[in-house]
Length: 451
Image (cartoon, rainbow, N blue to C red; front, side, top):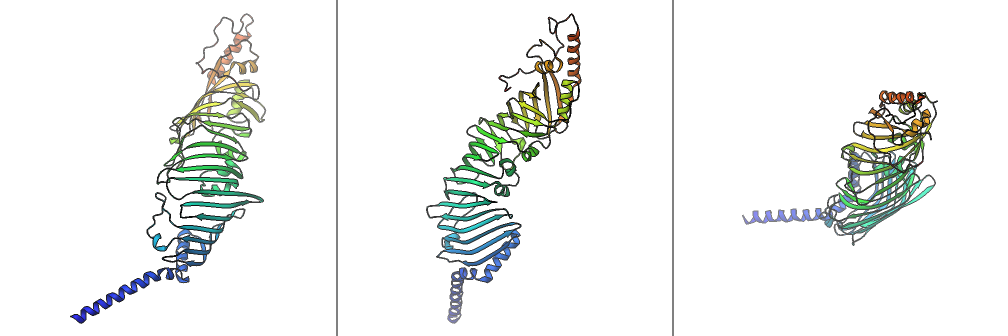
C-alpha cells in the first residue's frame, strides 16, 4: 500500500513537473517556426489575407516581439519592422482589452510601418509609442502621387481620456476605405486638413464629446457636439461651406428632376437645439434637425423636365434648350421623421423671374408636396403687367416622385389668363378697384432678397 502511494505521488510529481516545464516552455513553443506557421495559416484563413512574419519572440516575464510582419489583403498592403510590447505574457492573460473596457499595461512600440491602399495611396514612416503612463503617440506620412501629408495622433489608453488628431494634406481615399458607406472623397476632394479632439469621460468608446475643424478644397466645416451610441447631438451651430462638384451633385441630386451643371459655394448652418444626427447606422427617418439653414446661392441647371415645364408656364412658350442660372434665397427648413419642411424661399430664375417655393419633401419615400408661387415680379416681367400688388402670388402645386414630379398648372394658368383678359380691357386698369382673381393665401415673402 505504501509502495502504491509512493508510486502515485511520484507520478503526480512528474506530471506537475512536466506541466510546469510545459507552461514555462509555452512561449518558446509558440515562438518556433512550426507554431508561427500554424498561427499564420489560421489568420490567413480567417481574414482571407496573405501574412508573413520573420520571427516571434514571446516570454512569460519579458518583452513580446514580432519582427518583419507583412500583410496583404486584395490590393492593400501593410508592413512593420518591429512590434514590441514591454509587458510579460503572464500579465497579458489578466488584461481585458475590448471596445467597451480598454485596459493597457506596459510599453508598446511599432517601428517603421507602412500601409498601402491600392497602388496610389500609402502611409509610411508610421511609428506608435505607448508607455506605462498609458499615453500613446502615433506619427506617419501620407503619400498620394507627389503630395506628401502628415498624420499625428496622441491620447491616453485609459479613462477618462483625451485624444487629439491632426491631419495635413491627408488622402481622403484612406478614410473612405474604412467607412465606404460615406462618399468621403466626393465631399472633401482628394485630400484634407483636420484638427479633431475627442474626450471620453467614461470607460466606454460609444460616448464622447468632440471638437473638429475640417478644411479641404471642397469643404470647410466646424462643429462641436456629443457622440452617444451612434448619434451626434450638437453643442454649437454646425457651420459648413462646400463646393457642389459634379461628383457630389450626382450623389445629392441622383433622384431629382433638377440636374445642376455648375454651382458656387453652398453654405449650411445647423442649430444645436434638440438636433440629433444618426451616424452609425445612418437612417434618414431618425434624423431630427429643428433648425437648418441652407444657402444654395447660384446654381446653373439643365433646362429640361420640371424646370422646362415651369419656364414654359411662366412665359407661355417653350424656352430654347439652354442651361438656366437660378439664384436662391437662403432656405430655412427642418427635418423630422424623414420629412423635410421648407419655409417660403424665393429664387430668381434666369435673372428675370422670381418664384417662391415652400412645402415638404419626404426623404424616405422620395416624394415631394411643394407649392411654387408665381410672384408679381414674374408676372410683370413675363406679361408686361403693371401695378399688381407686391405680395400677389399665384400658387401652383408640384407633387409626386422627386425624379418626376407633376405640376398642377391648370388652376394657375386660368388665373393668369383671367388677369390677361382684365389687362386687355381698355376701360379697366389693373388692378384698379376691381378684385383680381381669387387665390389661395401664400406665406409672405422674406426680406431681404439676395438680388
